[in-house]
Length: 471
Image (cartoon, rainbow, N blue to C red; front, side, top):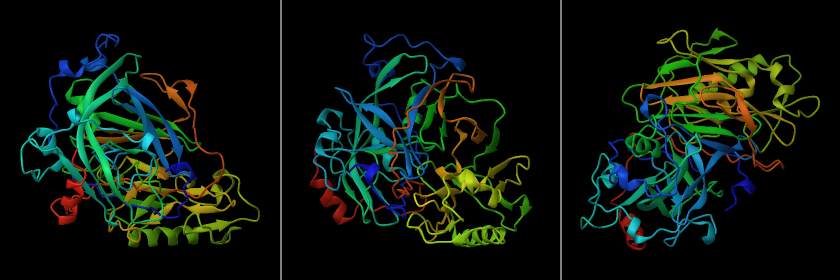
């Protein structure tokens, strides 16, 4: 599957990942993990006594691709895999040849696991993946299998592995260590469009995430941030060396498995709307922003009323459900933004903090030159009453998820270039690496964890699928 040639009008799979929230144990001693010490350079300590942060160039865009991703080097010998960045789930997984059913990559582009890297059922890491339940194994040394089920009846089945990842600190030094992730060998997709990338980079706040594992080795702080450019590309960082001053900080909602805000109130053009007590999840795995049907209907009505007397007409466009045309085709959002008003999320518990969604943060311009509404009906998409702030509303902002201080921050930023540590200066351009030809958006929604969604690990079908893929 080449995601950059896929076309879709709605999400193929609105993913609600199983909750992965227990403490994630080290696979072995830190000394044994640094398996390339002779080849790697010295790893000087960064601020706070930790080594440093990790910085990754990001590729992709909201439209026409519909996703943002990074490249990770996995295995020995090392191979590069493109993974979609997802702050809405914890478990990182890669499509793998075990062999694979339903994988969308050619065999030569799949991850190939070896038996010696399999995590056993008795290993504490397996318990983390299955938390709060226990792994269902006949023998302690059985392989640790995992299953992820989604609300649209799609699923991912695989085995948990511990393999070498090669990472580079911002100071240029390299480190190779074993980290735990999922090898997905059975993927069920009920929709007509395949997922992008070779897998998912889980960046949620659970202990199964790669960030939590890196923090467990005292390599970096449990802080991550992303800066997604509206022009395509951007950057992602793990650690706190790039956190700028002057950010707006909001506490994360306590006892949530997701990056969930305190209750918010919606303002339109700076005025109250009566929409209150709105809890939103910040999810880089969702291309668009989703509100439940009541909030969505109210916000759409406000936007439509604000367009009265403006030279815009509604038009059907296969890109998104709600679109407008002008007297001539629009070339960019800049051509149409002045017709629309600002949406604002105000947080009464922290009254000075607001998340402003300028028209650029909720509109896209399609290949047909139409302006389309990038806020979608989440209930219709299978999200129930969840509200998600997706990529379209996060572009051209540095968004930081500080798991150590339990807060989320944002600030407007130029996301087109890689920053220098401790500053917002930029030293070189990022390559966007996206197809310049317009296509329909891949409206991915990779993974807000549903804390109440039932698991089906013990179903007869699941057991049959697992037995057929025993490595």
